Structure formats: C-alpha cells, structure tokens
Length: 191
Image (cartoon, rainbow, N blue to C red; front, side, top):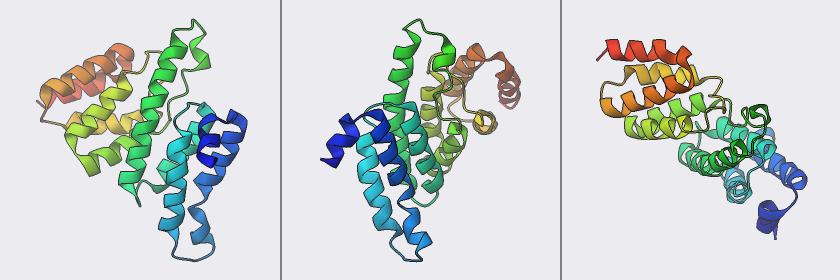
C-alpha cells in the first residue's frame, strides 16, 4: 500500500512522505544507535518507488538524500540518482515541447549534479563519468546546467583518454553555453 501511495498518490502527500523518508537515516545518528544501514535501506526501498513519477519538489528532497549519503553509500545513491535522471529528463523534454516559457522548467535539474559527477568519476572512472555528463548535457538547451557544473568541467579538462568522446561532449556544452569555451580551449591545449 505504501509503495502504491508513493507511486500514485497526490504530489502533495508524496512530497510529505518523501521528506520523512529522506530524514529517516538521520534518526540513528540523533539517537546514537548503530542502525544507520537499516534506516537507510528502508528509505531506499521507498524512495525507489517515489521516483517513478516526476515532481520537482519531491525530486529536490530525493537529491538532498543523495547528496547527504553518497559518500557513505555510493552505489545505492548512484542507482537512485541514475533512476531519477531517467525520469527527470523526459519530463523536462516534454515540458520544453509544450511551448511554455522556459522559466517554468529550466531550473528543474538538480543544482549540484556537478558534485555528483565528481563522485562518479572517483568511484566509477572516466567512461561512466563521460556517459553521465553527456546524459546531462543532452537535456533541452533551456534547462540550466548545475550551479556547480564548473567542478565537472575542471575534471573534464584533465581527461587525456577517450578524446573523441570528450570532444563531442565539449562541442555540445559549448553549443549550449559559449561561456564554457575557455574550458574547451584548456582541454584542447592539453592534448
């Protein structure tokens, strides 16, 4: 029943429940118990249900959960993040085709995806980092890059392998925002 509620309930009620699920792993820390993993696993079980239907406010809470626990439980948080992107991007693409002003949806992507991309690079390596950064770059042009996207660009500049992939990604980035051309030039100079 709870899973069905998280998947099909009203956004207002889903947001409230997700907020509590996001906070749940903090309880063992507050109460000085060693049950973090148990509480985290409960949250994960239900957050994976909640992300099946996009709602920006609900996703903001889920992204905070990812940000808070990615260092402790990278694989789980990475799985949740990837699944959220697979629902979020089509929702933003659909919104961009409605003819509404971009200000209605351009800020929906998570503002700190750059920091998550750094964790991907550290834990999964260059190929996965490139795949994930390109996935984000392929959002509609009106959707903003993460506030901390420069962190990911600083690492992209250092990559000396996968040159064709990096070049293609940079061309997409620069076509969306020419201000990132300096980063592209630094990468080219290092080749």
